[in-house]
Image (cartoon, rainbow, N blue to C red):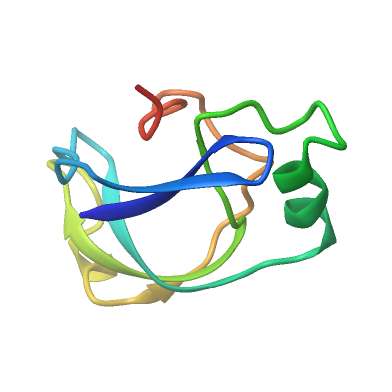
Length: 98
C-alpha cells in the first residue's frame, strides 16, 4: 500500500508499506477518501507541535472494512466506516512511522 507521509515542515514523501496483518479482534480498513482541514494545514507547516513527522496526514476519512481478524465480527467485512482519530487503543500507533 502507499501512504503520503509528512516528513518535515511542508515536505512529503510517497512511500510503500506492507499491508498490516490483522490480529485477533481487529479489523483492517482501507481508506477510500480523506479530507484535509485547517488542523492538517497547520500540522503541515509545523505551526503546531501536535503533528510529529514522519506522519500520515488526514484524519477525516471514509473507509471500508477489508479484512476481519479472528474473534472479530465478520459481518463488518465490506461495510463502510469512519473513525475518530482521537480515540484509539494505542496498539497501532506509529504503524506508518519508521
